[in-house]
Image (cartoon, rainbow, N blue to C red; front, side):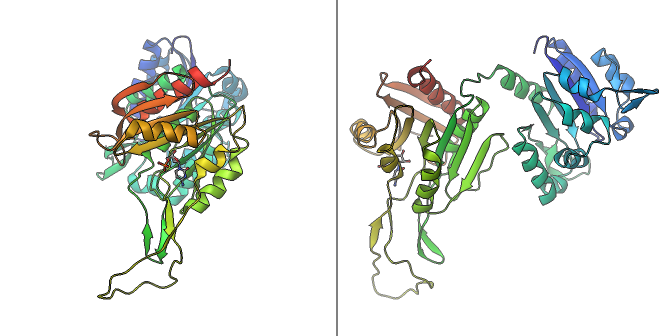
Amino acid sequence: MKNKKILIAVSGSIAAYKSASLIRLLVIAGAEVKVLMTESAKEFISPLTLSTLSKNKVYSDLIDEDSWSNHVELGLWADAMIVAPATANTIARMANGLCENIVTAVYLSARCPVYIAPAMDLDMWEHPSTQENIKKLLSCGNQIIDPEVGELASGLHGKGRMAEPENIMAFLSEAFDKKKDLTGKKVLITAGPTHERIDPVRYIGNRSSGKMGMALAEECARRGAEVVLILGPSSLDTNTANIAIERVVTAEEMYASAQKHHHSSTLCIFSAAVADYKPQNPASRKIKKSEEAFQISLQRTPDIANELGTLKSEEQTHIGFALETEHEEENALSKLNRKNFDMIVLNSLNDEGAGFGHDTNKVRIYGTKHDVIDIKLKPKSELAGDIINTFVEFYVKS
Ligand code: C5P
């Protein structure tokens, strides 16, 4: 954070008191801070407090005592702009390019990364308009520092509290320190289960949550990649910029989507638990139960990794996953070879806390260019870092 030039933009929310601590923490960390405020922010915290803490003049008008506050210059000056707190109103204005105040005018002029820390009541946060605006802001490359769950000024309890200043600092440090070693790379990730229709209400599926694939997508995007995440049925979502999620249901849909993006992706990660079989003749109406035993004929679904493995070029790296209950090493190595993977990540269902649904995982990585790597039980988000580090160390030509 040392010597970084940071713009803090404060909009009118009760959470504005937290921006005082945030500014203080940034200044202590060695950053140079300038503050922008909307008119209504002044109702919640005084410009004098923020100018004293930032040791700089506070900007709140586009016209400042007969002279023009140069929003373009401010936008170009900053290494990062942090909108904290960002109200639903300011978020809507930013998302729609309105620039009638200093905060939104500087935002439109800024070339630096922009971080947005929303603060609002839970229903305002969940409202489809706000969520639509957040998506728009993400699609422009901004980063959202998710609001936290807790007591809200309204007396309600839920998601909407602006992230605590310490957590914003941690987010920023990670963003500044993060290696951008995947910049310019396109990454394709399959994740989650697939559902294969038996009748309109039943399907064949599995217990995959998609969490490992999502963690990998977020890791790659934070390291500068453009990610396409092809996600089977899952309620997971992300606020990380540069991840395009394509939602699919069946193995065939996942394959069609993956085929579309394969040729332009330098790294392909097959973390989906694709159903291997689908009902041969799905019923168009709900199947009624009877006392008789009932059989469904199944047919194979496409093996996405296998099919795309035959198309892999010299410039491409394929990473696969294996979830085994027996003969783990033997099965993983045979898949590495058969599916033309460069690396395969083995998780065992015999390990406590590993595999489906958990937030943690414990794996062993086999590869064509390195010795076996054992990774102890840890959060999937950290494990994603280890997997990508292995890819960068052994498979990216420098
Ligand atoms: O053969 P198995 O399903 O165990 O292989 C696991 C690996 O193959 C995973 O990387 C998985 O995403 C991929 N796979 C696939 N399409 C399938 C089955 C598996 O891409 N139909």
